[in-house]
Image (cartoon, rainbow, N blue to C red; front, side, top):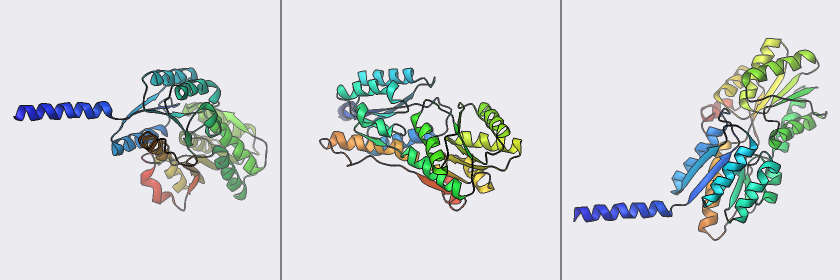
Length: 303
């Protein structure tokens, strides 16, 4: 009798596993940006809470063509939904549209808010990047910045371009941007060179947290008085805020960008197409000396 019960339990477990919803998340990280593990964690936390499966993938090359291939491969497995970042709609749009046309519901995250609907996604979870940049620029201007420089580590990423353009708009000046990579040594070198070649620059916005940390080192090396601000949180960025080397960072609460799409897709599949009535903005919010201590333990973990 005991063997029969064990066999029945095993069959039930396999049956339940076979019927579990399965989602695939694909993002544009190269695996070097500290931002994305928090997004992945959010997605996996939601999957565990809901009893569904989540597979996380990224193209280590950072190449958009490789990312499009990952989307195509995932679509071929007919998952219950795709969660995809959209830094380059021209490169990724056809693969996402093909997924939607094949009956796979798609939610875009992080970047690509403006292009989300046109590539066939149900909705988008992320911050309005242009607004976030503009808010950062307006605050920098109020705090005395008269000429700014924006550091963009992913020139192909429309979200980062929007951040930089918004920063310039908030300052009321033309875009002054230099493209780097995710290589912190290159970020430091190019930032130092830009500051040494133009002594009028007194404000720097870094479009990512590792960029911010490298920029802080470059500013020390040059010995300039620079108002430094950035996007996203890591323990190092929080430390720089507490020391006064960074004035503020924009928090887009990236755990929400991983967590909420799994919830949205689960509700969509379980409730005859139920969807929120609008995109879900995960930010922006400011973290500065006034509240850094409150969120310090969340940096690099949930935010």
